Length: 396
Image (cartoon, rainbow, N blue to C red; front, side, top):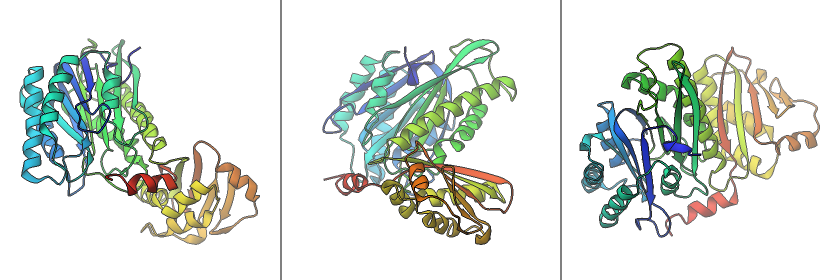
């Protein structure tokens, strides 16, 4: 059974080894049979890469037919030449699949500050176009990987007007993960039919409850993007407004995005543990989310996770430096089901029980502020020796 981006009807994909990386698949195409409604969200980095600028420009129309992605080279910090290379990738893809250049979305991932080897990209796009097929979604998912140890793809079914529909997706990412819009590279497809504004609204909502709630190392990429294409090939009634069908699609997209997000954080570079940081009793959701992110990105909290050390003082300290007004004497903390701190001070508990809670999958860290009724959460991974090894020699 086909899963991933080609699970919905109306899509073909391919992944090829173009030689951009030393070994392995490194160029992917995703192509719809017909022009689709499309939407995207992109990194908020002020040093965003040329492919981000080109993709954002093309998706402003709300229509797309194809996505071209390379791994091994981010085409970031490459100036006007990098913008020209991104546009050439678009033009090559448009000619190969038979669509206007404005209907092609481009994305790149890999080393920053290096020009794309365009001779390899040219031959790779031509080869990928020849291999396009509905059963090649998994090859495309492998072709967008960098330091990932495994591909990330999934699909979810739902109904619109009584007709079965599917949403599928693929994503890549293992390091430089602390998204500020979407995360890394993520591509979604659906055979439902939606207007572009509704598709964009659903994507923003889904990303906000999934990909925007994971962190591996606190670093936001120059190339982050999440893109969705809707083919309408299921033959279900078009979703043109809010209501039951829109809610069904939104729920399916969010479920899929969360599955991919969990795969991303579990495959974090060097990760041995995954943790959910949940903040309760905040005045606003924004404040709860801010505290959850600071705790989730704290090197001291992450190294304690790696060592299996239930050092709740590090959680409390990170909570207090998040820039949120609070009364430390009201803060309570749980590690799993073990209540370790109450009203800003230690409780009586068994250290072995707290240590055992750090062996759960995922580890559950819960913080209650006592300031209000709002809540927020983040997923994070631990910080291991292996993470340092990978990133100390990423280019060498």
